[in-house]
Image (cartoon, rainbow, N blue to C red):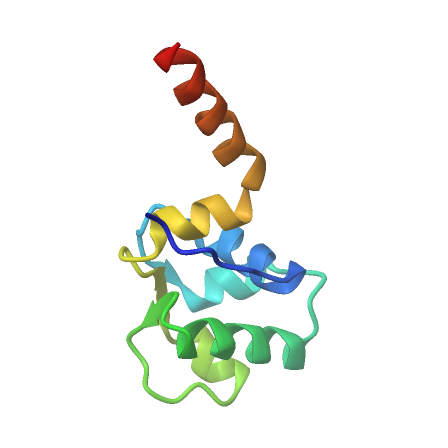
Amino acid sequence: MGREIKLDGGEITLLKKIGLSGGPVYGKLLVDRIEGMETGELLDTLLGLIDQGFVLTNKVNLRTMEDVEKAFFRVNAAYAKDLRDAVNPGGRRERERTKRQRRV
């Protein structure tokens, strides 16, 4: 049974920009993709996702935007399915409906 993950708007935006496939994204490319987010909000949100274990990085300390730009980020494969459901909750409901219809 999957974990119920609650995400706010900034976290959803960051996860979509990183990508839920598990492939690494270079920090410079990530910063370029995120246009509407302020520097402080981006750092706080990214550090929160890393602290929760949802996002993995090759750097230990991320304190400035220069640190973020020099790092690689990827979604933790252990949480990928649950994060996909949290980012797109409507898709999960459709899969559950399809499963119920097949059993009848």
